[in-house]
Length: 259
Image (cartoon, rainbow, N blue to C red; front, side, top):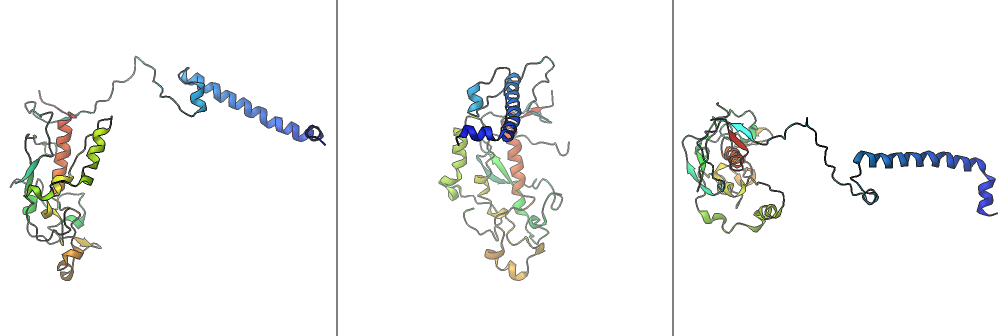
């Protein structure tokens, strides 16, 4: 018996096949032409077949809202001049008695692990260092008020030897090299290099383990229990905020609210 005889011998399956196939073809055609109507001819048949959709330009409307501005209004003096080529990451650590900018324990977002004073650190000089830019000075904002070694115990001041990380490890500048080759401009808030000089700003043994202060025995073993990865608050992380703020200023994302 040939295939044609088998097909004719089972009219029920034959009709059932067509009852499924025809609606499926109709649905496929409707979807196919709907896509063409929706894109108004901006998409070609080969694009659909090869699954390469083209970007659709939105129609121009007289009632379209204005583009959203990325600039944020901040209370910055209009007399302030921000150099367009200001390298906010080039500078040195200078002692400033006006720091920290807020008292110990007043940051509501600070984990107890990093509240070094509460955890037993009696020396607070590590909070009084400010990052001074070499070739430019950034204005202060009053918006709120209108590792080379894994050893950081007994460190009380920054590392002033500029050759400490010179030459800079190739792996540390890999991100900068990649960003420089990108077509889309990306600004990197590079806190790594300047933070490398602040061995004094780590919690060390003034931290918590399992939500408890270290025992005297643990404090006497800083190589094992010292935290040289995180940072005390107030301290270095506040400078990171200043750098983020300065980066926004340099890139023109903040505008003055003064005349």
